[in-house]
Amino acid sequence: MATVQVSEAEKVYIMHGVRDDLRVDGRGCEDYRHMEIETDVVSNTDGSAKVTLGHTAILVGIKAEIGKPRPMVADEGYLEFFVDCSANATPEFEGRGGEELGTELSNTLYKVFNNRNSIDLRALCISPGEHCWVLYVDVLLLQCDGNLFDAISVAVKAALFNTRISKVHISEDEEGGKEIELSDDPYDCMRLHVENVPCIVTLCKVGQRHVVDATLLEKACSVASLLISVTHRGTITCVRKVGGGSLDPESIFEMMETGKRVGKALHAPLMEVLQKEESLGNKRQKAAKGSWPVLRELPRLRWRAPSTRPWSRCEAGALLLLNSSWTG
Image 1 (cartoon, rainbow, N blue to C red):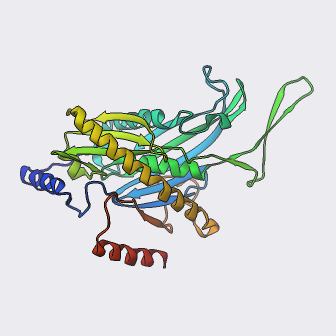
Image 2 (tube, rainbow, N blue to C red; image 1 turned 180 degrees about the horizontal axis):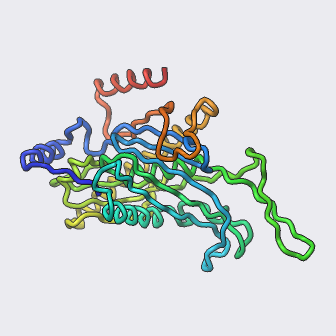
Image 3 (cartoon, rainbow, N blue to C red; image 1 turned 60 degrees about the vertical axis):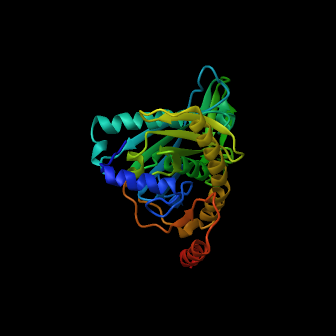
């Protein structure tokens, strides 16, 4: 994971701000940074999305291919994750550092998303025990400024929402074998139900409190973090501790309650933004084929994740002004 050097004076300043619920960038402890979401940005994929959270940028592409079901679940398809930690995001991702982080991220994503509680894997089955759809989810880290897990989870959910899988028609040949035909009609496709796909909320313990969406500076002041994946109903599906420090049971309970509350509040506005972004249709431009890491300047929908604390008059007025400038 990318790190920064922080002096003792800076640590004291950051920790005192967290204690008073006023972080360095003006956010409260449970506030996210501004988020930008774009879908259908890469033309040679079945689904794609780009998410920018602060200065963290994530690109996700999904390709659907026909494969063989796993032996233990013959009536389900499955997902495969690959995370590429680009050295352009931070020099620390060069060599083994990027490979180890990519493996760690891939394993976490597999546990969070590749189960029937998150996605209807049975809908990916073509013929039980013989053929199924395999979704290859490729994640590219374009820029790193902390909170990778949350940004990646939102990008994966957005890409799954954008994914269209060709309808399959199965027929038998003269010898009794099965022939699989894919529809050529781009509108004759299957969409995935992503309402129950969880989002990851990362909480970092800074001093005696915990913060959501920590920056690299705040991460440097944290002893340990807790990853919590939460569905739109507020159900926790996965919990994982990250970092070398320890967390006492009371802190874990408080962090889980905060993660549950914050994660549940993410889903409704996220789905609203995805549906609105999809309604733009052909007004959006796509990245040219073969230019996976290179994106043009695309029209963006900007979204601030909901805060669990009430807005002040100043904040509400500023938000209305910004929203009018974005939509105008």
